[in-house]
Length: 287
Image 1 (cartoon, helix red, strand yellow):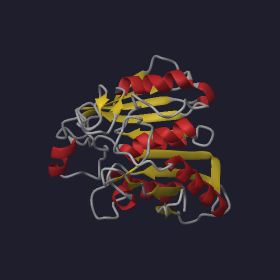
Image 2 (cartoon, one colour):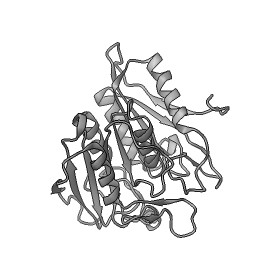
Image 3 (cartoon, helix red, strand yellow):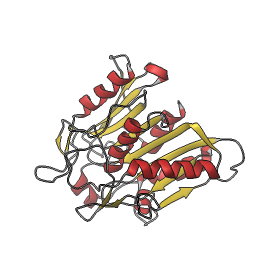
């Protein structure tokens, strides 16, 4: 119960959980989703499902919370987009802080290894956590999300490492910035992927010349490739990383959890050259 509302969540506890403190990872669903769609418990393809395998293998605790219904009748999160009319008005930072504290009281959580990742609206919410919980969150990984052009959030008080995964042909969160979901959607405006990276590079005081590499093109039929920009060496060992999915749409890259061609007609191409969850975990594990 937070802010007068009953809030719900899923939790994954790995086998072998003892007294040794382990990492905690929050996974935040997109606009219109919920915890079950996030991890494929509804029977559909779900790239975030891979996190269950990672958590079992690496001994992690996963928190997969549910958002609340917003003005447009769809579940979501109150992220930092000040010009969005579709986001709920709930204090989701207070909810997630309370949830983290509850889990810390019941299970051995390493408070130096708390991370968050999310898809779309959930990715925007992970950025809000980085802005407002910089003293508690070590790193975030927004997927198909960007920094708000009009933000209602204060600047973060400390460095936070950030990994972006962004498609250059995303029909909902435009690569070059602008209105989310197209003109008249009411879903607010965002900075470009480049300017979103620059924001965090400047805040973390990372070097401004990235190392650039191309991931192997393992699937030549998916219509996309991935270029990696990495900027380590920021304050407190922070870094900023961007996976630019050239030709990619509003979809999490995955080799194994593949969307149907019908869904790709809606969200654009899904890349199959990388396993998003594995790349994000490697980024978190480095912290």
